[in-house]
Length: 228
Image 1 (tube, rainbow, N blue to C red):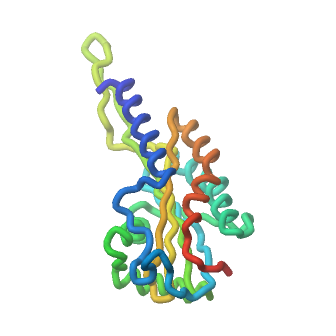
Image 2 (cartoon, rainbow, N blue to C red):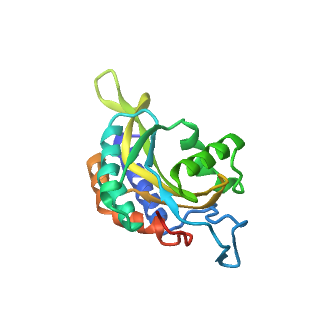
Image 3 (cartoon, rainbow, N blue to C red):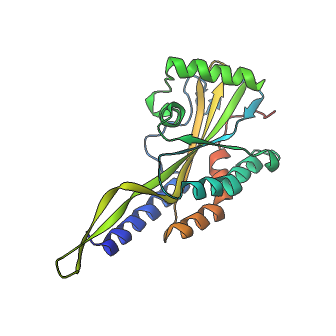
């Protein structure tokens, strides 16, 4: 596939993915734990909840730092504001993409809300340490793409592009909020994406410009728990 064709196809897919995520068209995601949510109503929930630092998860890639900073400067404050919290308290914690929390948390809702025993214990302890009845854990999963190398014919004419074993950040991310109760159970999860088209800087700008919309999407159907 030529570099130009690859770029056009990739940008189209990013735009389609971002559009679907922002309007909530995310197939297969159960957002509310049926143990606590039935017939359109939540059972009585212990409150308040505490908002934890945003976990920014990324596998090794060039330019990850720029995406982390963009999330810290724009998305995290927008999310804190959406929760009615002081934006000066917005915090971000950088995490390796293969860490247990980064890999497991987003999949609990798609696994019938079954939390692995060790993580359930850790989550319950995290809630206890917060001094609240539950916690809200925001998570960002950064996207990356292979860096390509162009192949040339004997006369120097470009003939193809191939993936290398190095990666670069896309400038896009998928954002989640996870509501965890005192028992370490997942009550509710929601997600929204930041996409955009163009080059890396264009997508970073798109993430900045849509931060408030992403935050609204993540919080608009939240369980009725107050924040401490």
